[in-house]
Length: 232
Image 1: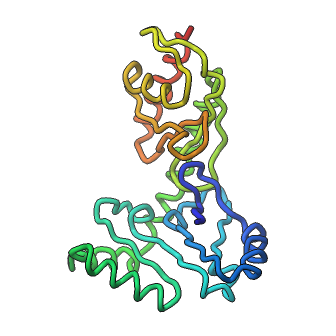
Image 2: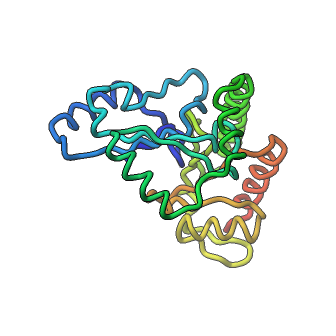
């Protein structure tokens, strides 16, 4: 499974890296790849993201590419996605979906078609907005003692390392022994919602969404800074 730009880190995958993966896959025709390209258009600051299907078209029989309108077009609640891959696999997927869901409503399909076929000016505006928000919030978090945070290359998440906060104690007496405990403390004592890195298999990190207003992000970062400042 490949997910680039990545959730939760915001990392992108350059073509050279995918070429290296393709070299291995050519020796393993029994291995299939599911490429989740949901954030493919949300790229920051001139970064370049590649996809396996484009880099290695000869591997088409082994690659299933997934995308949708949830992120690029801010249509998360519409729940519309699409996939491209080997005809046999797509046919099997259609059979399963036809028996397990009621299908996507015509109104939702029409809205997704309008988003995909219509003007893309708003996508480019969102690109620039997310990049600016991520850079701003990343700088604010990186200035907090005990937290390190890099600027992501895509998507709309920050994934700061909070190793410097592990082992400290909150004013309420909670010992921060993990990123999960930290997220609980941030929610209960600072009013900031974050997802613990362990949920993604990588600790001690936390995931913060930048799909919010500048004011909300500034307030969240200020609350985190104030929370850290009073840790024992």
